Amino acid sequence: MNSLLISKEKKKLSDELIRWSKGRERLLNITTIPYNSSEILYKVILENCSNGIKTLYITEEEEDNVEVINLIKKNSTFRDYINIKEDYNTQQYELVVAKCDDLDHIQDKFEIIVYNGISNVVNLSYEEIIRSMGRLLSFGGKIISYNFECIFSGNKEIIIPIRDNGCPLVEPMLIKTKIDLNKDLPYVAYEHLKWSLENKKKVIIYVPDKERVNKVYSYLEKYCRNISKEVYYFTEYNKDKDELKKFLNRKSSIIVTNDYCHNRLDIENANIMVFFADNNCFNYKKLIYISGKVGRKEKNNLGEVIFLAKEENLEIEKSKNIIRNFNKEAWEKKFFVAQNLF
Image (cartoon, rainbow, N blue to C red; front, side, top):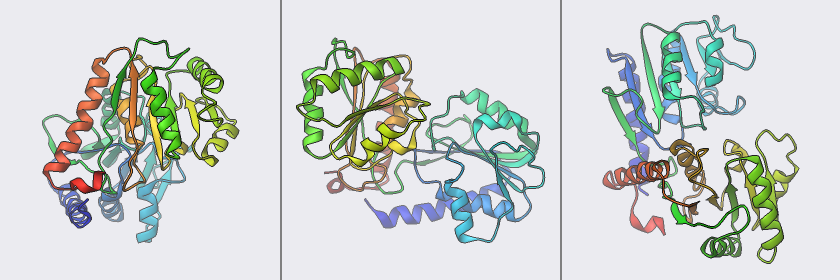
């Protein structure tokens, strides 16, 4: 990792965004990896809001932990913002922070809209998001997209192919199997699970739905107790967090879940396995977000991502290609060196 180069690049890009916001271009793509830092966005947002330019910031971060807002509060006295929860009366604020699901309720117009698509999984299509932003954009306004894909084709694109911590995205390994993962586990996957636990790593197993959470958990709890007695499960929308807390507090533990949006599972020293990765539930976007959870907080010993599927479908192939292209771009820009990856 070349930390000095990354720091210089971030400052250069931050300044470039401010210049761009004062120019004639109206649409800008910043393409980067999922869950990357949003630090480069805060100065352009603060600069414009402080000068009375009404700005909308769209992010899927938790309302009480929006990185851009935290940086603004830390580095300025600007407080003229609202983070939408239930009150959609935004007219008196220069900066409005909202999630994608809130956009249809907003009636204001904004001179600048910044869309952060890397903070968490978004279930809306790009077409729906662009349509909502177009409705909220004032005449002559500008939109910045901060996303892992370019969504405004034919417009300027800035690529940031590296994590803020200087680490690459972990490229997933595919294990093809005809075994019914509801009832059994291929030997190579069992060995990986065993190796992870022996090396004091947590293992997060993602499955498509609640039914398979129960089936996979039951199998592991019954037949894999020789490698770990710390097997837990957590389902999407489950308000009972006891199982999740137990998993987080145990070393060498396993959790089976269908909740790939839960940020509490963004933990250090973890490997990830995706069972039924060729299921229709897992499109390429979700597979990329899941892969991006590994190594977010580490600088070494990044962990592994394994997809288990009957075949490599187009979604798996596309997710792997996007991740590989980010890492290729980072190598070419000399953002990290080989010895940091082992």
